Amino acid sequence: AAGEPALKKAKVGGPVAAVWEWQDGDDWKVFGAEDTEMLEGRYKTGGGKSKFNTTEFNFNKGYGTIYEVNFEKMTQKNADTKKFRNMRRKDPLGGSKALWEWWNDQEDWSAFNAEDSQMLEKAFASGMTPLETKQLSFNEGYDSLYIFDFGVMAQVNSDSGTSRKIQRTAAGGSNMFGHTKGEDDAYADVLLAAKDSDAHAGAAPGMKFKLGLDPVEVSAQKAKGAVSCRKRERDYGPIVSKDPHGRMCFDEMLKNEKEFCGEWAVFYHSYSAAALLYEVQAAVGSVL
Image (cartoon, rainbow, N blue to C red):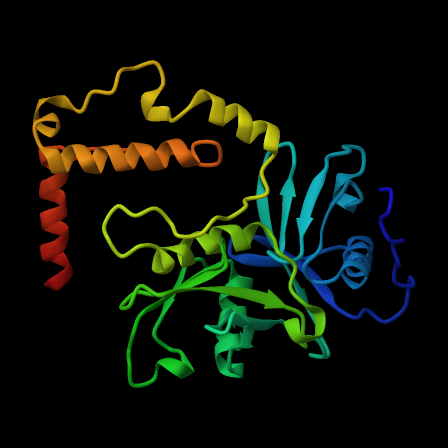
């Protein structure tokens, strides 16, 4: 592609700097030599956060299917079938390891302790998400349950509700390589916005965020309006309509939906008597 740096391929027959594998169910399988050279060359040229499209996989010869490779998430995606596969890069000499960092209150990146980083890397490489754990060095004596979502790169303290962005970067960390804003930041920012929003119930997030969506598509969806109000009159029903607080809650809900309808889809659901009974049974079961 125009403006793309030249691809530096490893010399055929030379020492292999890393082993590249793809996940097949519970097993990991090694890429062939040509694919390993291609992936390693791209990785060294673009870095551990780069993304690219390719038809160069050896198993793809004669098909011409486009595969989307994301080194930050370590995934490959078939552009036709939309099927994802996890990938991983293993350095046989142990010379290059991923570093995990969290976004601190000083609005900067801090590295996790070595044992925590090792645990996160193991879970990430296995494709396990979300990861729920109390086994963190900074959590000793507190016993809080932490949830790590590698899909949106965020961690949540389930006790306090505090959310923080996390990132996986090359050895040396963001102090050496910097941080490139990506789509994961946008989704993590939504979580972080909750603690910066107004304290009263129903408050909208206190910060704006960009999702990197096509402006034309956002404008088209915005023009259609909130999904709940399309081709129907606003009718809260006989019960809510008589309740001032109920009307206020629904008005605020629709106001937020209208504001964000260009970027977000909203799904509502209601409980039946059977669903409520199930919730009671689940609550009882959780303490038995």
